[in-house]
Image (cartoon, rainbow, N blue to C red):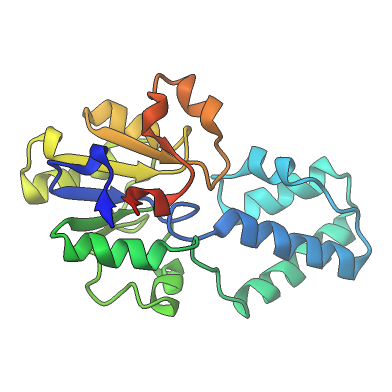
Length: 225
């Protein structure tokens, strides 16, 4: 295995969590389909979920209900059952994510995590053995008490940048969202690698001036055979 060209010379890798490391949107959609099937509700296309993706979970569920013209009773049933299933299922990793991350650590990279999740919602990291110091710093929704600082606000990255003091050419951010991740990197002057395992596709990134060579199928592509 060898590093892709874009990682050469870098010291610090900042990683998004959902749909970069965790296969969240696919997991949520499959869960929603099973709930709709169980409640005899119409099964909506995944594009609807992608359209609302990035908002708080309850807002997403309510938006889906409104889009599909579900009754208030059906909406409440859908949200209740969805959350019950969410509590009893584990969000899977993107294929090969754990192997790639462990190899990157062995190569000497400093790995940090930048997510809009709250601290209490980081349990999937424990489920997959990626907590307890695996990431040098985890910046989440609760990192800045009393402030509504979250991606795409570039200030979310300040703790990581100030904590290490590396020049920006030694840092790279890996994320899946042209709406929430890419703008943070661009505002901070940091190189960005996109993965298309989330709601954004190649076109979404190229429209925001990201070179095609910096758009990868998944996190597994950070290493070459």
